[in-house]
Length: 366
Image 1 (cartoon, rainbow, N blue to C red):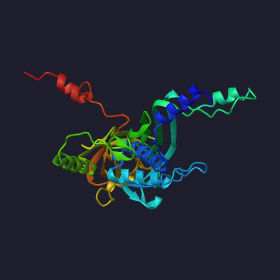
Image 2: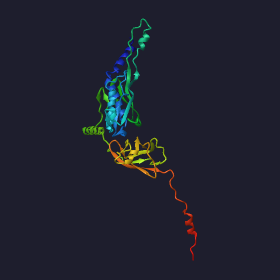
Image 3: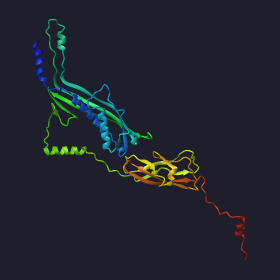
Image 4: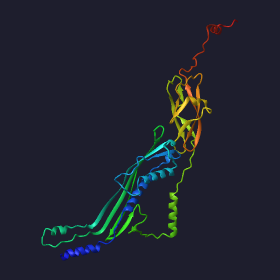
């Protein structure tokens, strides 16, 4: 071995250092779970607050060719259930007990990694060249000679959620696509390291131990811990009952075809909680006799088939309904007018018979 080669090998041994990450399994699990938590945190279930909900999980399952430890379908399902409960949803174990079905799907859950070396990577170039000379001695491979090295790992998750009415299958809410990633970086300087940083680490760590360069006092640290605990608490917004119900159209012509149901108008709840979902039902007939002539489908008020319409005999119907936001109920009385086809018109002049006309036109005797 020539002196120059020996010098290079010696320099590599001096600069290579001894720091190394032996096992990355915990890091991969932390990255994957952190990506799931960050993704689920973006999903706002408050639109379903107070509603009875069944969580459909059949589309969330573990891939056969991917294993990320404890971060599996059960973890994702539990994270979504926790987010729904925190938003005020009333989870039901049986589908028949719920008004709404919430369905979720997972599009991505995996980890990636890449490495960047500032220096000379390990190679066996000299050994390959010397092999062409039969009498040349064997030259060992040159180890990695790096001034700095960065090893980065990341995980990504993508989840989509939507909800629909169990009875009508009508879509009521969707989250959109929520996605997030998490990363962890190991940095080596002249072989010293790893210095660990990233979303899964609260502070920069050196070979697994935290490096604290702050001058914060113990009281400040205690305050930070208490503040973080407060941020984790669930704060529910006080529910305000709906205060009114509006009907988009309250008139029906008396010549309407009532062989089938006739739609009167659309019902809308006036509620201070704009994100609430509302259901409308007619009260029992003993509270409003005209309720028997109507029915409600979703938010549509309809006249029952076969109902007789006669403006002269019954110029209006009086109905009573109840609106619910899932927690509180409000009753409202509405009137549906029956409009006549040919309404009576006022005469343009006074009509009198001939005799009366003669009496009116004959002058009195003097």
